Image (tube, rainbow, N blue to C red; front, side, top):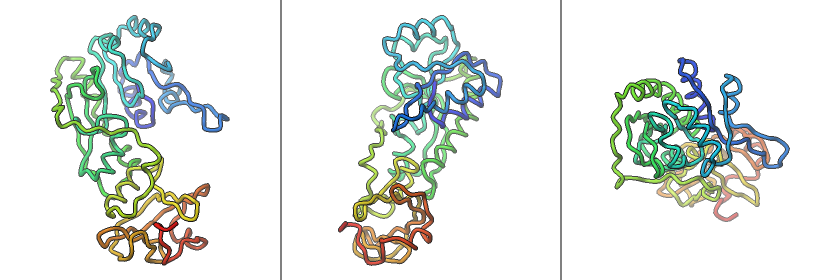
Length: 303
């Protein structure tokens, strides 16, 4: 059970290593914003390519058809990864070995919808993959294994996501074998240390120039590629795609160089390296500055 691109290497790994995948569950296709196009989930796409049966129920709760289908399937194990639906309590015992979840954080930290983004925005030094048993509470089940990676300050959410997805695709194989052979010990989480990675809202993406430079970089990297950290200038939005910390000094929000370096708190600044003006394509900073109205001496707090 999975939906986004993050899950695709995991499904491919199970398939290519000979595991009998009886059925795949994924979220139903979504209409694009203007309703012109129907977008299948990445997991539906790869299921079609690999010729694996898939199902796309809108909801599992009180869904007697899906309950009956899964019961009759008599599966050994259900593997869940960013599926996007809560698994109802009465489903949890249908597979012989239950449901396990691949969660992209070091549990009990960052339970919930956006663990990778929140971890980067929080300037955590590391993140990882947790393999856990699903119970009724969100991401709170006992954990069998955690695999950690360092977070490089220059890496964005897309890059960290790709690393964690590859790691999960490799490690899930041993975990499945151990679970099927009853060689796995699941250990209760320390619930007192739980933190929650709530869904990202677009209004969080606005850059606050009074913040410290490291926090601004964390937001830029954590929210790449979507929704993207942004600032406004003369009524237009500009997404910052890539930036680095520098030591330029000026009033907070002031453009202090011809290369779009912006002063922040504590005598630091950020150098913007890649940017995207509203409705335009992404640009490297040298190209962007050639025709930009944002000049040295402008202040982004006063617009």
